[in-house]
Length: 165
Ligand code: ADP
Image (cartoon, rainbow, N blue to C red):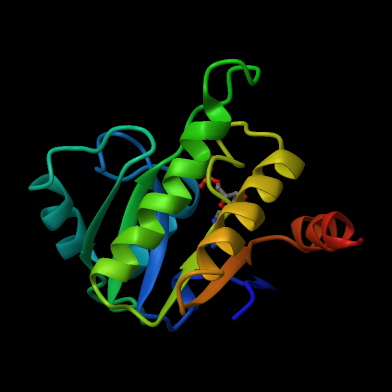
């Protein structure tokens, strides 16, 4: 099944798991992280406190609480530092480890935001390229419905341009 790219608020997407672009503390933050915690309710933060943080490129799973999604997979993207600090490998790891967790939990559908492309400053075109190629490589081997959820019309148009042959 090919990756589906849509424009939406990820907190509204009814899938088995949504992915959170978290920070290493897993204690909430701005952007999509804040939106997910607001929509899930305080029980999410309580569960996150017990996880003891998460290193960059790794992923941890919690319940989804008040979200339409059953689970939240929290992953920590790299902070953009110019491109020579393993950012690309770390960003690909975020997608791979999140997909692997979904497989371990036998999930059928999941949704990603564009990790690191907000406050963490990753150039959008490059973030999109890594997201699309890493997810599609996984989907060649594994049956899973995956959405890449872009928040703005501008990002959606960028993804269409990027996808043109
Ligand atoms: P990071 O710190 O990893 O850069 P951000 O949350 O700042 O995370 O941004 C990551 C991406 O998530 C950005 O492209 C931003 O536009 C997008 N985003 C913010 N809120 C939402 C939301 N509610 N649903 C989907 N995407 C969102």
